[in-house]
Length: 169
Image (cartoon, rainbow, N blue to C red; front, side, top):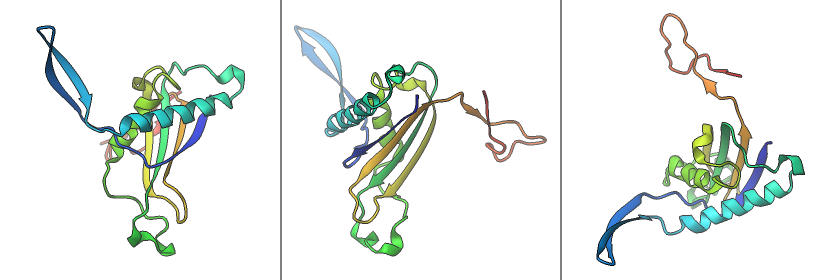
């Protein structure tokens, strides 16, 4: 099964988890909260879009993925005014938020919907760009099974590290 879909809206990064202790019935109980207030609604939007994309698949392909997964994500962030000219249409987004926190929010949102747990993600391809002119911010997501890609040793010294990548089957 290969699942591809688009989520429209401004991507929200996963925040840091903040622990604190609360007394409940005389006992100290640790509670962990998410520092980003908007991530829950963004995660629900991603999960809903994934669920709708799954419903478009044939009945045989609607199972939750169990093996290793490749997750490809392209974030199209809101375009600032300084990039409103047509000559700057393909500018990469090098401002906040960080790509890894954006990807973590998507990976967590797909857990239990597309795959059992985000620990199944063994490959990730992430891009962060400004949205095309006259286009709303959105995220393109593709999830597919994979066998994984490993760096191969190149004699005499494997430099650069990932020179000679090959897919393992």
